[in-house]
Image 1 (cartoon, rainbow, N blue to C red):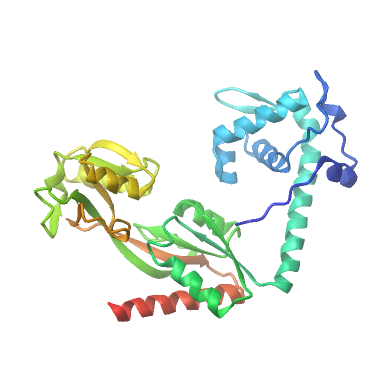
Image 2 (image 1 turned 90 degrees about the horizontal axis):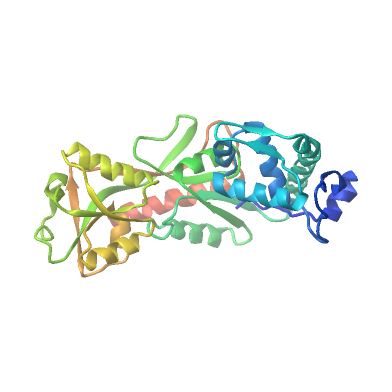
Length: 333
């Protein structure tokens, strides 16, 4: 993951002769209170976007978290930094006073972080890797081990996020390589190396009338209660779309980000689950049956990086380890 360096108020004051007295209107700031460096970064982005949703997307955060941080800072300073309505966000005069200092501090942090990382790179090789969840279920952990054994002095920083966010992290150079799941191909500005393919499957109680079938149609599940991944996920949208295309609207009894919870709910008779087959098979449970769905719905797992970039030696070697893992798995099959 990308490392951040927190500065104390004293460090900031020394660099820019920055004093908070300008912003202490309305109350005396408590001893030891200081603006957090991460908030200053959020503050700058909000001034640029004038929109909490857009700012949250840039910062890989959420509007509610940004709003909470802003309220805390305004409470500490005793002034409003933004005038907020349901339609727009406007910076106040006090916000304008803070803005040039905030920009300088954020710029300083970026420069200092870059300097530290470049010096670390000369003494220790660092690979920044992005991935979706489920590293173990898709044998990505095996590649990490293979890479570490061949380059014991190398260090890997791993950032976990959604596939859409991982694409943006690659474009913004917040990671050098990323494992991304795709159902409709990968954006044209990214190089993709196929790592694995997975298909959607139904997870049924072992005593379910359809449990002995090898393949079933989605329509055969029309009267079932469904246990699905969280609503914000691509998998949820894929599952509900498949049901709609089969002529029925699914009765969703429960959604959960943890696939093991969905499987356990199946064993308790709460419904049938739809999930990627490799996730369902990872922790074998004799109380459930995993049945293929027709027509088949597949997703591809790619190792990606931006086109036109020069990869580090560490990244090039990691790609080599990934190819070796794929070849080894193919031979076993």
